[in-house]
Image (tube, rainbow, N blue to C red; front, side):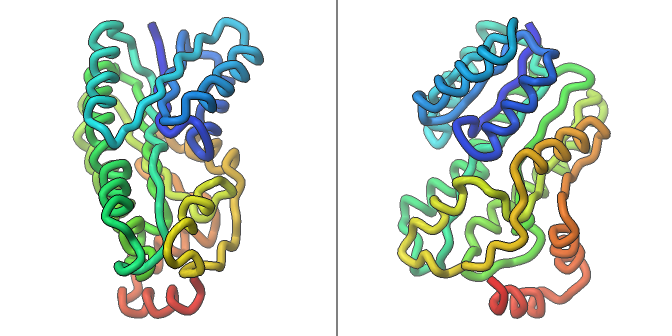
Length: 258
């Protein structure tokens, strides 16, 4: 049975990835993973209603909890599917300084953005074959240190390094890993990010990209075997400035424009 797995599928980028992947019509089953079961059910009904023959399996799991990852491992071991595509799109960020984040926000951000991402990826890899593809949602924030958005940006820096190195490790198996690093995307991300003690830390969210544009480019870059997918001139400039300019200067500019 050929399947794709999308985490963070109940909203935002994950939901858009699910829609685009389903439309390709090359799967027997699409597994959707997220916490909110009612949203997953709505997406299941949408996709199965629009695409005859596609089976959608909603998995309401909280990936910050070890038992949820164990459940997915058990399901994979029982069914033994051929996973053609894995999209790790679960994650969240919070604006604010070190004084503004709660212990729970700190732990959950690191656990979801980094820890569970690694466990999910490693759990799925034994079920992928030659031509398999992994897409992992990074961020343009990964390209430079960002005061007052520090923890999220740091988790995404980890994601970029993890993804690109894993891509090299998997070359012998002909499996590609693409890290998707968009700038600002029109999703619910900002509602969560600004629900903090200091919601006005960052206010300049331009330019704003549409999720479907980011996803289409990401899937195209993945098919081409690229280890990084970056949409937009401004996002490419952020990556370039992070490579070429002194970090002190980059942070000074960020503090003026954020």
